[in-house]
Image 1 (spheres, helix red, strand yellow):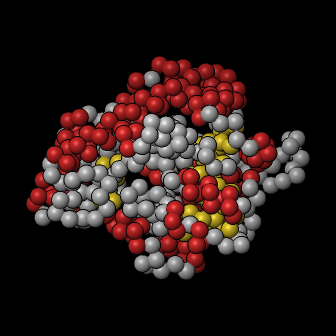
Image 2 (cartoon, helix red, strand yellow; image 1 turned 135 degrees about the vertical axis):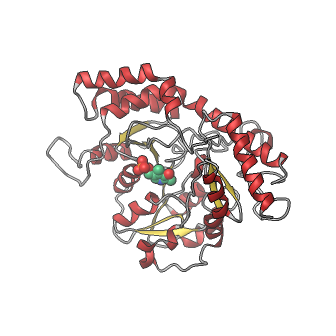
Image 3 (cartoon, rainbow, N blue to C red; image 1 turned 120 degrees about the horizontal axis):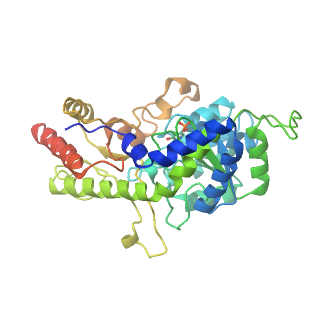
Length: 394
Ligand SMILES: *Cc1c(COP(=O)(O)O)cnc(C)c1O
């Protein structure tokens, strides 16, 4: 049985008529840059996320870059972020000649360890950039408290987490000062190419984001400030408008798949419960945990994990991955190298061993297929094969 990591075709076919119509309509109009579809999608996003301003941009990376430009990040300003994330989080800060200041991750959620932020705050710190990795909210309350205490700006990297909800019931991206999302095709809400979104509840920041999206021009050809080309294509906005009403049902399907994986790993005696962080003979596969599930906290407190990825940890990760590949099960390593061990960040002078949790996670993590249209049989097959490998290699 073949199990791809992600297959976008079933989703496309389920909405083919509406998507094709939307694309054709843009072709007929020959209006390609921003266009009326963009404004429509932005208003729909404001409704959906419950925020004041949603601004479509060219990619998730550009969303982060634009956010940093809007808060006027200067060379040598420091931005605190987790060392374990997709490259873009640190890349955008370094491109502006500001300094990524790295923090280890929490072994339970893989998100920034909030207990290690404050000791990294200096007089140069300008912002904190939490990442909602794999579709689960970072622990935002302590981050917002620290930001308030030290007068810092919070830019949320929600590229993998649009529609994920923090335990206080707020969608991620709308908690900090600016939230950033990606419409890259492999995210939960993907367009037909590159795209992204920036959101804020602050009118002044929104104005800056909108002007800097078009080279800092206001009016056209008059530039008081610097910006860039961070525009979203009309076509991409039209595609997002068609897909948005289906996002919650896709996330629910991903959550169901995650629950089935968790149950099957426990039934196969590969793990005791989700959320263990140490390997032992009862926990040969460490399972991801959606913390603050409704039954664990009061009803008003919830955490809605949208499982952009279901990431397990295993000790013989590379051998397991090879075994699964031979059995036509695709997997991916998100992410094999934390920022502090990336060559391009040698100049930051971090050492191996500086962030032991992230290093351990990077060496053992494996994302298994989780996309909404995956069948139960495919999930059973994945767990059976992992079980076979682990029982052979005890
Ligand atoms: C995907 C991703 C980005 C970048 O988004 P693009 O649209 O690919 O530019 C940034 N941060 C994280 C955590 C991501 O997963």
